[in-house]
Image (cartoon, rainbow, N blue to C red; front, top):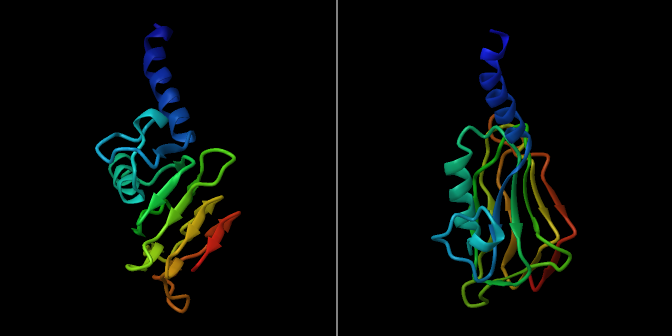
Length: 165
């Protein structure tokens, strides 16, 4: 009789353990936005698609998120980032030792990443070891520090190289 509860407890334990592992989306310069992004072999190409997958697959915002960016040149990408996970981090980082390069179009300009979540809670967006080149603005973090309901905080930009910004 005491073993009758084991399968349910095992499923609950496995579910809880899965929530401790960050949800990861992989980016590759030659990736396909029609892919699922769950492995390096099925990587997506754009940050916009990565964000859409994260919003779809982690709608409750209940775990850390990693966007793992493979080495390569990513051209002409801009993104309005509005996915945050209160109490958890969202990290956009180089997948390996070599930093990926996001290169803008000088004729178009624009902002590489605009953080537009203003929920009045720490947003915990971390960008690590990325090269941003030839944009009007590398990062824009919107919010209102004077308003308790619309600020951003606890964001980090670490090891990034900014060129021709």
